[in-house]
Length: 77
Image (tube, rainbow, N blue to C red; front, side, top):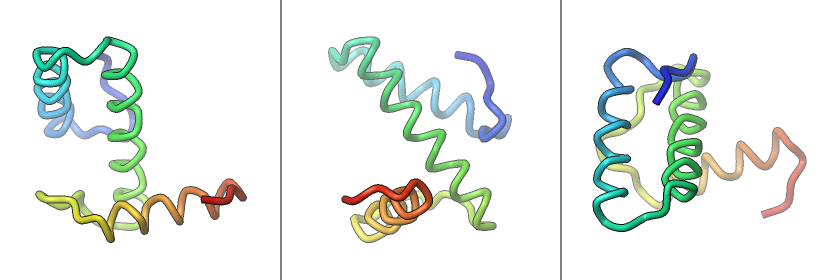
């Protein structure tokens, strides 16, 4: 997995490890790629807003991210 702009050197190995867990749990490569894509988008959003991704993500934080994402792209949730 190539390092992306939104990933720091410290988060890229963590994401790669998570993808391996997903693969061991039977997720298809396309699902792993899609999930990893959204993880990177979330990391980029955190970096853009000046925050660090939390250790444990809450439902409220996911919903806030989804609302910001939809608002920027003029989408309806």
